[in-house]
Amino acid sequence: MAENKTKPTKLSVAAFIAAVPDPARRADAQALVKLMQNAAGEKPQLWGPSIIGFGSCHYRYDSGREGDAPLIAFSPRRAATVLYGVTGCSDSKALLARLGRHTTGKGCLYIKKFADVDQQVLEAMVVKSLATTRARHAKAT
Image 1 (tube, rainbow, N blue to C red):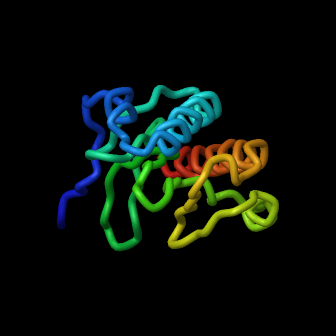
Image 2 (image 1 turned 90 degrees about the vertical axis):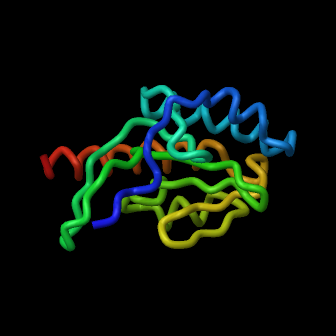
């Protein structure tokens, strides 16, 4: 079975964010680090070369594939900031309807500008998704 490409690294999150070329995307990343760190109670860690994750969990699919992943994470990409693991709560559809400008795809949330979304709604999504993920993985162990 293939090994996961995205693993926690010892690289500096602060240095990674400082190297983000777009000043607005860099500021958004700093704001997201604060929001996610407060919600998760975990320090940020770079997963692979470009994903900032908080906490970790071990997963195992029915297919037998397993690995570790951050509880929640984001990556300040050129086109949009991608948030991972924040749409996993039961009422995420209702929260997404109130979030503001965004798109979604395969479990990811895409935000072009942090100012375009309601930060309180985003924080609620993060907190609820964290609780759901932690509960699911606590049962699995």
